[in-house]
Image (cartoon, rainbow, N blue to C red):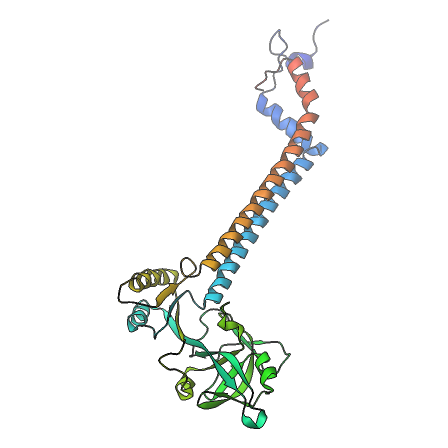
Length: 326
């Protein structure tokens, strides 16, 4: 019996090889699988894998940026020059030459006392004098009454006023509007500090905070030659300028005649912050690796199921004469 036209067109040699080109056969098979829905699971697995990796990467980047931003707030600026004596003029001039914004704060422990008419109780406090522009990073939050949520503010205590922690009012039996005796002067309590971004975790900072304007500090008479004062000159600006200032300040602080001066930054001066950031980065990298592994497993399982469903078709094509490459 003569071969039909269909069977004749399907063979190109006595061996019975299929005449359809491999690319055309591949597209036909792909289209058939798409219409049959066999590729849906594989496409969903790939989509979920890409979405998981993208989400984890985006979350890790945002979290890393947030940690770095919070670390700068804890530091009080992009870099800080801390010293036991007034900040050397050379550091201030160098910061100005590089276009950096600088703010100086003084902190030391002292005794705060209530007026005699209100009991005259005294309490160890952590006194801190600030100047306009403080803080360079983060926001100071204050409240106008105890037990009320803090409100961010860009101002500092006015002259003749102090801002205090709420526990100080309880220990001295004072209220907002009363006077607090500090050294040779008395200052009116006007706000309650609810959040101080650069407070730190030193032993002195566990005492109630008393914040006053730097213009009022000389009137207290508390700054004496033997006072345990910490001067902190914080700077903020562009990353390049901060990097240049940090390098210059670190070299200047290492000179033999420069004593009691140290430069604090995220990379050098505050190792606890650097360790925290490094640990967070390692954790985020581990999360990203775990997401990649889970995504790879999901794609592999979907691809394996898809391949198993085509084993019979592939075997049939081999029987009909298709090569392994095709």
